[in-house]
Image (cartoon, rainbow, N blue to C red; front, side, top):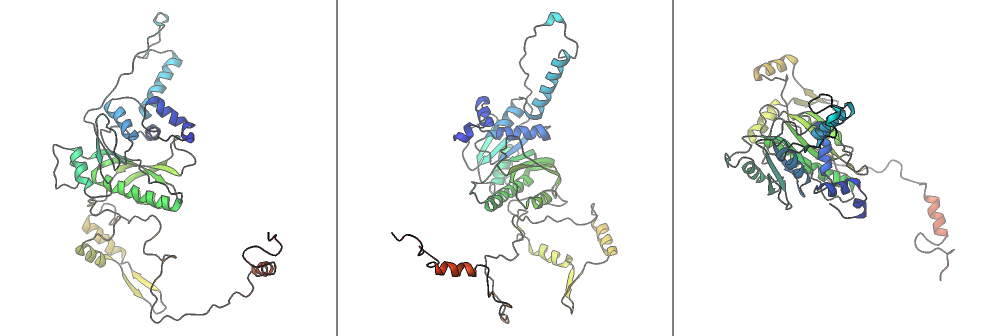
Length: 387
């Protein structure tokens, strides 16, 4: 955690120090669980970009030690308040006057069985109880075998590209070192998020959950649309512990449902559209609609008749009435579009045209003439003291 005066004035910073959390970001995960019930029926979790380990600490205390935080802690607190207001005992019966005062009993811990937590980060992290820590790069394909071995060391297959026993939840609180240039920060963060998602696709089980930090920008709707291709429900949340001045938020994806026939791999991530085989390219060219240019210059696309499409759907046995494609990930527009800061080769027969109306009297012309009469466009003018 930081040591600046701003951090010391922060309530969650002080509270994290008091309650023994490694960072104030632990409350972000706890509040997300309070809102979305993330830890329900969860025993296998992967924590990406985990350092310094506050989110892994939450997982360790909730899943392994069985402590009540988040949604479970909130529900227990509501029940305790209800019993106190109505004067009920723990079994629901009315308290007798003789039983007062009542001794405060310690909370019973409810640890879960078969818990497996793996934390990955490039930076070193202090060990936690029941958490397997790894120093690895989530964007590199070599991380997959290391992760699979950490999840299932007994049944690990070096040739496997996905987990035999998949995980229930993948979380990522990673963020780049901000530069102050919002567009650049949003782009780098989106690439980091997409790297985390590519790894999550390899280990998540059907119906699993994915939680990651995002920077909300003008093109964030595109990101939501792409996440909905592989998740049934995508929502965004900003916990109370997240500073209002920050553009960070968290995307909560539930109901993992990859398209039929989809195989995840870091060697061929969904972001890369160039990693296709020759057979795939030939098949795609055959299935693409034919195009022809008319005499008036308009492009005519032949999409085929509806009867042909229905026959293809019946032959392929498509459940959703058509073929589904993974859309390429775009953070700042189509990479094939023109860039105003780049140069391009012009055709040989190009003819340069003169401007139709060159500027004859710009609005700032009079200002330049007055500045020139006063002593020039640069430096000191005649009216100023020359000493």
